[in-house]
Image (cartoon, rainbow, N blue to C red; front, side):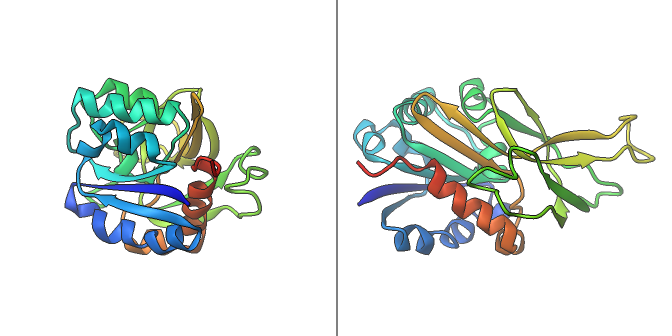
Length: 224
């Protein structure tokens, strides 16, 4: 039986407990033994991390110690899968450059006008995304929710993008396209980031949920 470690906490606005509980039954049904931790202290536990085949993280903002992020990086490099959604993975531990390098993307903004951050926007699959096991066969879709502007690097394999238009009242002067869903290989480990997922309704969207569930299976270490 493979072991999944669910790590949650941080800003309560992203409902870390309720959001992760949406996926615990899926993990168990797929044969994972699930351990839930309410802080990142577990990342510094060498024995637990060495035994984990998958980490599902939902910790927005918050902080992490040098020892904890080192434990996470070591586990992923050794083959532990690492995945999550929205701020729970892409807006975590802003002060840790080592975490940012591991994940390959950092939330920068969710632009909106007049304080309204829920905007209608499209998630468009890339050519790679249309044939990747996580996103293959899925159609482009539109959400009305926070649209993440992320800063990333080209070690990522981008499966889907979203475009921030140049709107009146905003300082950027041309449309900006950024990754919305990506994978990243780190040593023997696989990472999957899905930026949609602000609330439970978005996580319940059929395509978003499919991406997260397929991402879990793709990222997890094969049975040993």
